[in-house]
Image 1 (cartoon, rainbow, N blue to C red):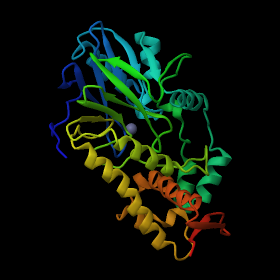
Image 2: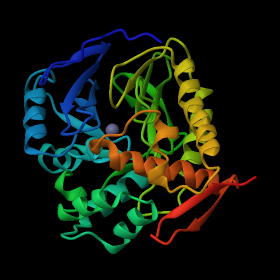
Image 3: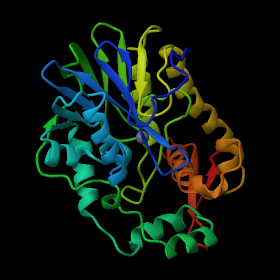
Image 4: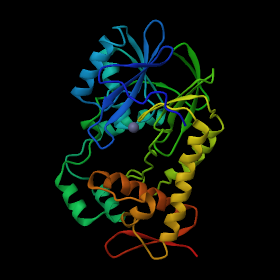
Length: 340
Ligand SMILES: [Zn+2]
């Protein structure tokens, strides 16, 4: 794999990574402290890909980007790769305040719109039950319950009605190129990726990242989900489109080439994690007890939540493919055991 730029763009600035394609960054208030966004030059204006976490701060940076690197020309379209807040966060602002059209997948739009309307002042019973089922550390759970619950609306600008749907097999013209639209799955359902017909560029959102493995998580929305199956299926399918020379523009970290190798790693990482996990399930274990074999490093407080939902995803997968059984422990946690 090669990384043509080892320094990302400064806040409020852009790097032209291909003709008519600008790479920009917005900050995130998390351990993963940035998200990549892109602008493609359509001649009469711009198509923006992903929008950052919604906040006054990121919208302030957008205003500087629009006036600076984007030259004050109109943003006609904003494309959202998937529904997560760091990508969809300012899409509604682009629609309401900038006059852009929103283009995204139906699932991404429905999830984003549903979750922004679903405001909770106290923790929903279902979420607490889900955490207990996963065996969340009681002290961690107690601390979490003291805080305001996670609310999508806190980090996503209100989304007005109306969007343009893209789906598997579509083609779209942007930045003077034609792009094939292919759907990913696993990190987020119906996650859009864009493959330029000239074979030069791939805009991959979080489906394909260069140096971190996208989080595959199960949430209280669908506790029995098997997103890892969707991840493996879509990565295998997208691998067939990968070429060594394509410049891959992802949602985080650095642009890179060497996609066939990276696709192999993204798939293999999870197969080997599943093998280590299966070895570990010689006695019954809850999701929260499976961090060591899965991640092979200490999980700090700041990563605990993401680690837990990813552990459930791996256990659900083993359960669904029939490699593990599960029973309810007295403390309410599901515990999983390797099927001999
Ligand atoms: Zn992301």
